[in-house]
Amino acid sequence: MRRLSIVVLLAVAVLMAPAAAHGQDAPYLGWTELLPGLTTQFDPSSENDCAAGRTRCVDAVIREMRRRFDPLAASCDHDSIFSLAYLRTTEEYRRTIEDPNFFDDTAFVNHEDVVFARLYFDAYDAWHGGRRQEVPGAWAIAFKAAADRSVSAQGDLSLGINAHVQRDLPFALAAIGIVKPDGTSRKPDHDRVNQILNRVSDDLYAEIARRFDPTIDDANLPGTLDDAGVFQVIPTWREIAWRNAERLVNARTPEERALVADSIERYAASQATILAQANAYPPLKDSSARDAYCALHHG
Image (cartoon, rainbow, N blue to C red; front, side, top):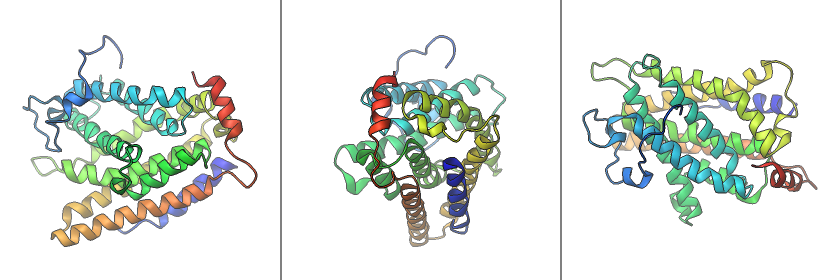
């Protein structure tokens, strides 16, 4: 019932939306080495692997995600839930691009991968570095819930996905561009990412239940019907993100763009508030059982 209720709540949230690696390891490339020259400009001829969208950049992002996730898991930090989800998704993306024909423009999507990830890294570092004024509202709610240990693992997961997809993704898409040089839309590649997310969902829930919080799988039914229901929320959010990116790109003046940006921030934060309330531990109950379980099983 808990996961079904989440689906219902998220469906309501959608209606409230504003109009709108396998094989040999690659040579080591530290994340910090990418930062000085990294911009949102895609340049296939650039010497910077991320600006050029080379696979080495995706490998570096995965290494950075693992570096961040491992201590979170070891300490049973509630931030570990979204960190794990993002890591497993990016690992599946890395496997997918072994097929050079999956995307129309793999290099561009690789570039998007790092620009998108950096928004999460920056928000996380600002929050944990005490620069709270730099943290977007939806992320602030997600990080505070994790710090307070006030929501279930399902709540931590939903809050992270909401902040990264509903808040970060429109800005990432608008920054890198949503049309090709010939004027055609990049949306087909955007939509293909949903296939990757679908492949990750079942194993991800099982891993979270095994290592961190068994209650996330309490309502799991035989087969995949309930997983499909939960999963369908994410493509819907990604569709909203694309339309919001279009609104940003089509804004005619800086003032109009600022209004669009503000509406995206406020909407994502409002959904975070709903999710935090829906997934909060009830009175007289807290995360003690979850944390004790994690202490024994997180590895």
